[in-house]
Amino acid sequence: MSDFLRLFGRPAIVTADAPGRVNLIGEHTDYNDGFVLPVAIPQRTRVQLAPREDSEVRIHSTALATNRHALTSLARRILFTNGSTMCKA
Image (cartoon, rainbow, N blue to C red):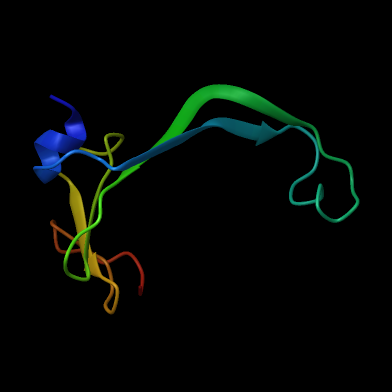
């Protein structure tokens, strides 16, 4: 069983991932006609998504402590299950 299916009770509809990268030279200059030397690193970012019928958004990171979820809607601030807030939606 996939982590997504176990956590959210349905399969992911969309999955995307990308390699990590660091800039050895420059930062935010590649799109400003400056010099930059990006290098791929082995870490990856993966996102899996499935639509919902309501405006609730549930977020889980496997890089954080077990059972740490963030809950929000498209109209309010993100509320972690430990009670802290992250940002306004």
